[in-house]
Length: 143
Image (tube, rainbow, N blue to C red; front, side, top):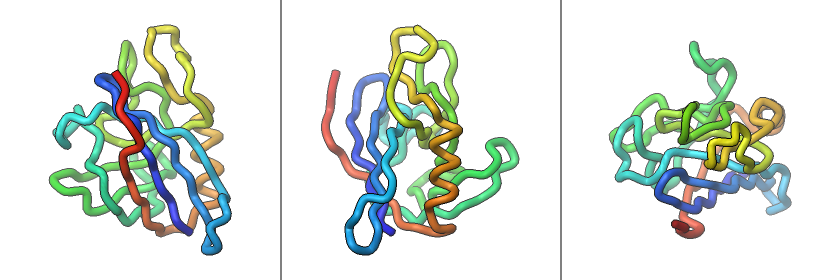
């Protein structure tokens, strides 16, 4: 399996589309991702850098079943987990990757969120192997 996360950066959030394909290049999964803005990989306020990472299925004491992104330069405890908000009144990430089915302003605070996060993560946990490679790259910038 190959997983690629293409990001679009904004000043307040980082939006992404994660696509997983099988060994023949056939798409087997797609979801939206939401992260903190790109602030130079600063802990707790920035998304992680673009690159290629090994990802492992884990059970987090605070997030439950999820995925751990390994060997992030200068960072630790980076997860792919459920959550809806990366900015605004409520925030569900301090540098991790949130997954969902689509973008929507779920709490009407003027910022886009990801929705159906629990359902999306559950699908990932069923479809993805216990260990896989994730490629993160830029797909654009917006204001």
